[in-house]
Length: 185
Ligand code: PAN
Ligand code: ZN
Image 1 (cartoon, rainbow, N blue to C red):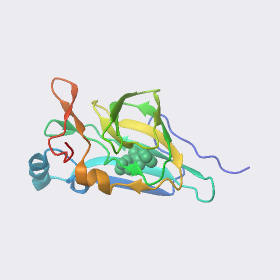
Image 2 (image 1 turned 45 degrees about the vertical axis):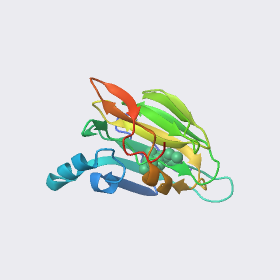
Image 3 (image 1 turned 30 degrees about the horizontal axis):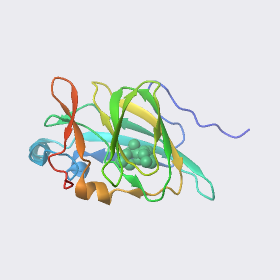
Image 4 (image 1 turned 45 degrees about the horizontal axis):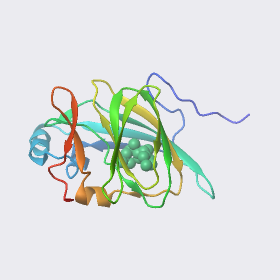
């Protein structure tokens, strides 16, 4: 018998991983809408924003999967999120939310935006042509499993340069508003 990978539903930990990535506030300074607030926090500390446990496979037709854990928190009134990316080639993806609450923000290159609620048990389909960012709007970690084509490729530069058109801020609860830093009209 071969060893089977095991997901701990309580903690979101995968037993077997090929990589673990940690993203701190300093890695996301170009992504948060309120850069001054981010710089103020960074003068005192550099909090962990999210962690990705990946199990990658390679070869023709291969799939890979990853668990993402986003910490609860805000920069200014903008909730913590993942950088967000386009896939370099048209490749869809499936997310299954294991715990927490959030919003999946998706935007295509023409600027069409779609949003989906993230909550325990939600199964979400990420369109091939849409950049996607997960945003933790709750008080607990937001944990989800993503399954994607191994050769999908991650294009972070477009998002870094122009930003998503919309961000999610806390205005007595999560609210989707125009991104003041978006360079798109
Ligand atoms: C996810 C993301 C993960 C981290 O596994 O890669 O949530 O987000 P960033 O890659 O935007 O930092 C996925 O969408 N993979 O394709
Ligand atoms: Zn993706």
